[in-house]
Image 1: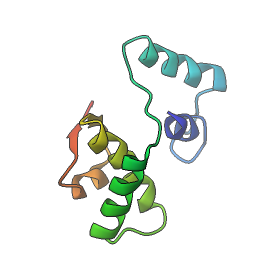
Image 2: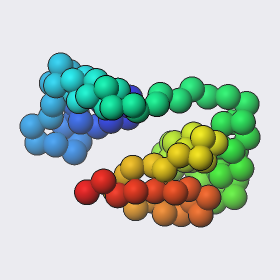
Image 3: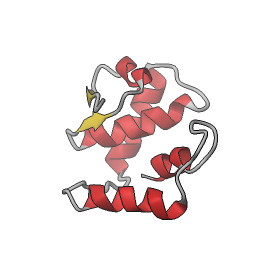
Image 4: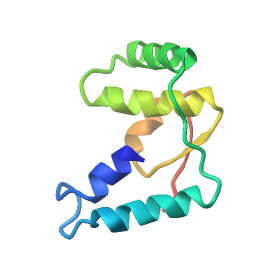
Length: 97
């Protein structure tokens, strides 16, 4: 959620970004619909390392690897329209748009 808050409240993607109150309200709506917040574990670290090394990721691409690691660990499907996640063959995705 932190990434969503960062992107939706900044000017890098949106000409008129959401206010902090608006963006947190959106996040709260997700939480109200059984969204599970995941925390890191030793297994997350192992999957993250494997994905980063397997796909030769560096810099900002490692952020995608961490997100993918959480989803892979929990056998979750990642809702995203970011096509960069297609590189992870281990990851199940869903384009919400």
